[in-house]
Every structure is written in C-alpha cells, then in structure tokens.
Image (cartoon, rainbow, N blue to C red; front, side, top):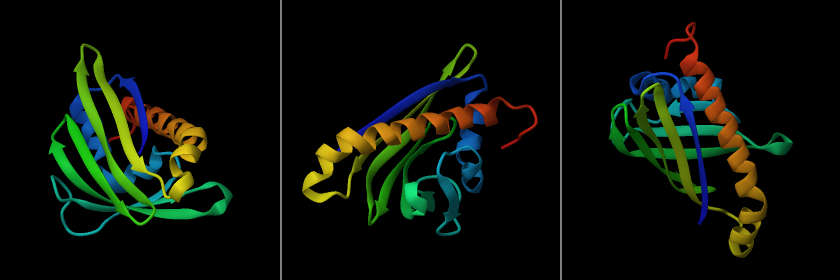
Length: 152
C-alpha cells in the first residue's frame, strides 16, 4: 500500500474550505490532472455520496476513479474509498481551524495496480509523482479559497 500525504495552510475559515472541497463538479478548477467529476447518483452530501473522477495521466491517457464518501463531518472531514478497477484504497481531507484560517491535510493510501512490482515501482516512481500532483492541487485549493472573486 502506497501512502501519499500533503498539507497546506489556507487563509480562509474551515466552512469555506469545506464548501470548496465538496463543490464536486468544480474540483477540476483546482485539482491537478482531474478532467471531470460527476456524481453517480442524486446524493450530494454526507456518507454515501458516489463520485466518478476522470483523471489525466502522462501520455494523454485518462483513468476513471470511482469513489464513495465513507466519512463526513461538516467543516472538518471528508473521507473516501476508491473503488475503481485501477484505483483502490482510502483517503481523506482533514480540516483543522487555526487562528488565521485552516490547516488542510490530504492523505491517501492506495493499492497500486502494478501487481508484483507494485510496491517497489510505486515507492520509487508513482508516490513522488502523486505527491507532487497532490501538492499542486492543494496550491490550487488555496488559491481558490483565498480568492475574493471566487465563491464555492
């Protein structure tokens, strides 16, 4: 299992950051590599929300990453389970209030679809690449949340 963990500080209250996180279809505006996010049902909030992420990979490839929300604490936590064929595992956005905004921690634990080479290749190549992509995504989230002209 590969673990990716990144964090940032956003100068916005947790409610604003949370609202931006769960504006599902708007995630491609800040989330690096995500081409589209679609709800896979009518439910938009809470445990049980089902999502389909379409993510771009190098070389023009895309992968579908189906996710289901497994934990939901408004303004504090959204956790998911990855259920797609090539993306299995769990992850979460954890929000912690600070005197000047919100500390955001984003972590994922993923089973990499590389069979016997999965752990070794993932540790050496995919984890650093995914970590850079996640950091860039958090920078985008920070930009959106701190912008006065963008409303989630």
